[in-house]
Picture 1: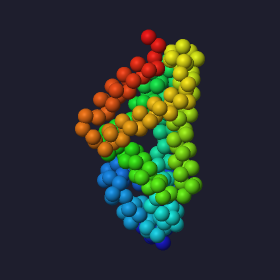
Picture 2 (picture 1 turned 180 degrees about the horizontal axis):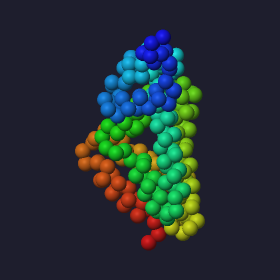
Picture 3 (picture 1 turned 120 degrees about the horizontal axis):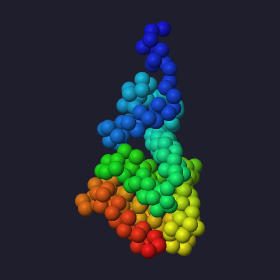
Picture 4 (picture 1 turned 30 degrees about the horizontal axis):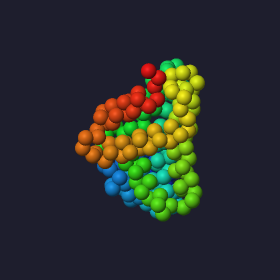
Length: 201
């Protein structure tokens, strides 16, 4: 068997497939992520990819889960470092808000959200698990800040739900490039909101 034939027959690890999918989104946009195109990128047939993922919806969701896993590890490192709760909250926000229009992670997130209207219960539960991880980390950070006297005595769960809704709204604006809501402007709005509603003065 020739080396080329061996490359065609050896399926790359699943993580390599998901990394290639995310790289395609980052470089060419979501519209250019097709089973055929991804197959050419990794040396597999689109039929072989369908064996792995069944549908494009499943490919997108698994790519999002892979990306979120990497973000989750980064978030864990940021939130466990020796710093004030306020400093770690700023790091959480910085990681949450998109880098700018067409941020690949947020582009993917928005597409998965859009497709979730007709998704099966398992897919929706997996999306909820992603949301839940962000929420739990924020609740724990808020509770710590309250217990240390850095934050006002808010209900961490309720405040986290409202705060993440604020972040989601601003982040969508950044990701789709709505004028007047660039990343720096959004971070300034969020900092002002935190100062007025959470910090002790």
